Image (cartoon, rainbow, N blue to C red; front, side, top):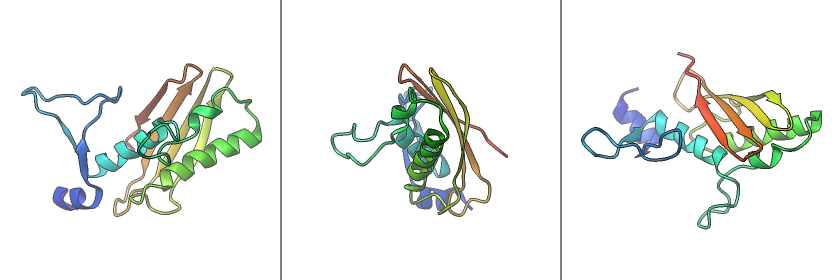
Length: 146
């Protein structure tokens, strides 16, 4: 798939850094996320944003933050994994039913989650590791399987 086709399918947007700020190029211009990187960035934003916190879109976000201090039970683990899977699969660029979620660790201070999914027309899976702690800080990193 060419970059033009990827941009047409997945779009483009202002690129965001790990801290969700917009980094600038050396010449001072704003960097752009293009193609699959745009879809991946949008998925991270949805997971990172507490559900209902955006005044202009109360349906955008996730409930991951609410699970952090919950007890690590089988029921809560299943509910958290289902929440992550549901929020990822809300993105129309994600291949339906391609998302798999695993809870890697969970204690009274933090939770670590791994999610695999495919974007439409992309053959390789994407892999995110989501770490959230009791201070309501969250880090979402890409693990590139290629």
